Length: 413
Picture 1 (cartoon, rainbow, N blue to C red):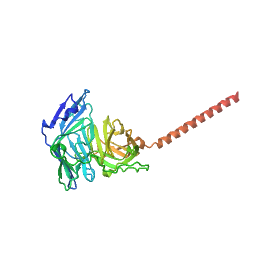
Picture 2: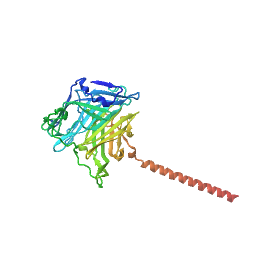
Picture 3: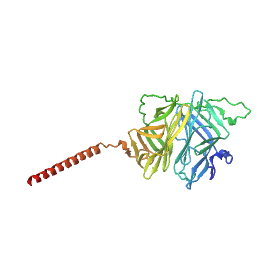
Picture 4: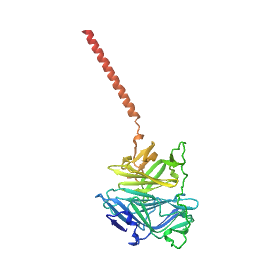
């Protein structure tokens, strides 16, 4: 793997053609469903990550996606295919696709890297999984039944990560498992050549845009999700999810509820020794749950939500949570409805949650630990009330008896 460090630099200068220093083999993958290819991708990527070191300084490190990768969690997904590319120790490059009746494009691009990987980040202060998500800018809208081709460099900059692409050939929504006519990026077209047809850059929504309503929203269906380590599950989760967001309609902010449909939701993520990630992708909506280990327990530390709203792609996060806690080797269980605040204009209602991100028992859940809301306090309350009444009766009897003895003493005198 190609590796370069930049101890005292910033990500901005890394627009240099790094691949000129070393040519690497591209990775090439195909995603199939019922022996029919829906996604074909061949490309080269350099990643430059800025992170905090143990001595409090920032460092940039550059590495290249290798030729050998895996695609666990990828899906043809009907209207919303998903391409997952895993490599190294917990690294995950992910791209969602959307389309309308004329064109398709990449919608949400994310890269998850593992700071606990001592080979890549030997002096990292934090030892956790980090995800960097952005709306794609290197992959413009492409006519249906055409393949996107770009031989020249293209750069995507997101939070703490710069991604450099070249020699890209990529197509989703393939017809008869064959690549369509090349649709070249603008950098590949000589200036003397007429520019290709310009297509709308508005991201098409794969689901109906939520409309403001005062009608009650049904309880969401419970979905079963998993993350695989090879062929074995390393994380299990089941839950019903409802997003509640403040959206702009006709110049007004309206709170709108959106249920996550398990039948149209893909699960992916990564498992580490001390951190784990569950990513749920539903069209252009992505919900991510980050789990960490503290002492002998695990808990939900961070929630990220990428939400497409009309013509805007918003990214919300809350990285200071302490929820869904259970002992290592056990699972967390909560049947009651819970609320997770992601931001001031977005929160999540969860239903019938069961999750175990670490130490599965041969691919199965461990013993369930009930949440505080599920615990039955009826018996303790009844017993406590009875004891309280008994104490009051004893005290009343004591004062009555004392008063009688006191009165009898006066009569004797």
